[in-house]
Image (cartoon, rainbow, N blue to C red; front, side, top):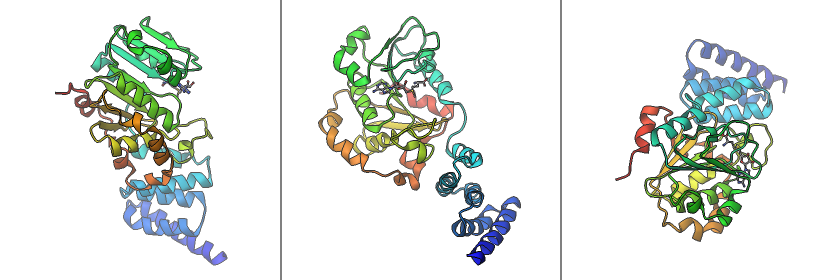
Length: 310
Ligand SMILES: C[S@@+](CC[C@H](N)C(=O)[O-])C[C@H]1O[C@@H](n2cnc3c(N)ncnc32)[C@H](O)[C@@H]1O
């Protein structure tokens, strides 16, 4: 036991000095072994830094998650996890740009909370916000109406097209209940109300780590298992165009090429829920960026995604 500790310490110091000397590829095997022999959170974090600097993001993410498991307060590991995949303008800034660019006639937002995202609606947009417990704390434009209902009840009880003045949904944001099956139903309902030119945005689909991707809210920060929706749509709806913008804190998927006549999700709802609920978070251990269609958070590259469909 004592010997193992001495070996782990020696490997750590050697690896740390290689890392400091700008040689992450050389440092990584030393730090990886140190992290295996010892469960000191800073050893595991050092392995994460080396893996990240060596361009091995998935491996670095796994080390970060392990370091956080050992020490949930290790802020450096938290920050490294954040910075590796998501950068640039935050979700509110990207959403504001999307409103400004699309100038949608109509907008539906599922999950309003304080209204921080709903207040970004432009004056000319007819907007409906849905939330069973809205706690609006920001002034909203007069064209916005908030319905204090769950999204399932809202879609069941209202003639949504009539609420939108007879128009389809041009733009929608899914940011309600952070459980995959709720987001799936929200997507299904919104797609039916869309056209081939509409856009559905899905928030929280690039999870930060296993802890915050749980179905129970264990931490203040919580994205839940919305990521499963992206995996499902990629597998069963290859006709859709899906790009998950790498915007902090948890990504924003832009889904286009919608098909309001598609009945695939409605006809297979139970089976789809069962299949994707069985998918463990470890599915994302490898190639998480590719599996979730991560796309650069660069407005010049995002704008063409919103172009009119031919
Ligand atoms: C993350 S907050 C929304 C934040 C908001 N979009 C923003 O960015 O400022 C999620 C909201 O979803 C609401 N919510 C929970 N279950 C819901 C459901 N079944 N349907 C609609 N909204 C729901 C919660 O009450 C909460 O206010």
